[in-house]
Length: 303
Image (cartoon, rainbow, N blue to C red; front, side):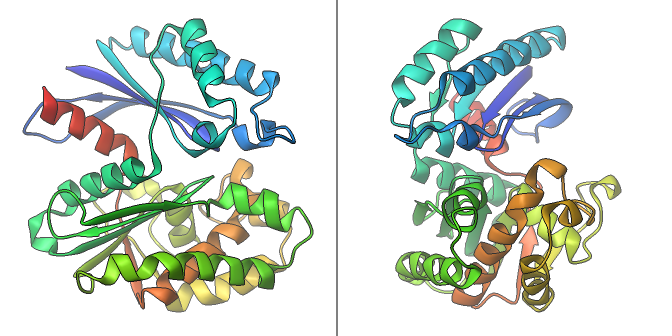
């Protein structure tokens, strides 16, 4: 069947249309995305503004039309940190659902981590043993670990690259202050993830990790999803120092960086470096599947 998975993230709205069936991998057929930057539309009280709601509603209407034009029989729509953490989340959901005719649901942080883990497990398989999975979004960092299809531990912490850029770097706080904050928050979660033992395979998903890997020499997306890509700690450390001195316009000229995320790369690199240091990971292998695939796979399992 042809299905759409609509992901409303902190940075981007992304509709992925796939041909899917139980027992086989979902095959991408079409993609439609739009930079939403919902966290830029938060007011002083932490509510998404009317302009932000209008922008989101417009995109969802367009995404639904795009999915229908491509022959989708069903659209799974979900929102993550930006909507989840907004003080007016319920009102936002009601308005955009009425405007679009879709049923946008908010994923809890631990569900986001769990479903991303499911996608990574299906991609790498049982031979990977105990998996550690990490995902840096715009609003949060998801971490999960386990030896089965569902993780033993799944957690979400408010360390997204967009959030940290807005609340720390753009607020005049130093990179050193941000580094301490990030490492303290991750350290509080590390014990639970490592209690079951070290990882046989450490995996990263998300646009942020893919961009960092590309900046450190990984193959471009044009080489296809089956090319092995990884992010090495020895390559990331000097990149963090480099990003600290660069303007967003210059960062945007680096390989793998989109213009709308260039200002967030420094904060994202700080989070990635802290993750690798605190979990003592020399390398993170990049998984092409992430949350959208996890949502789809779980749905197919339940049919």
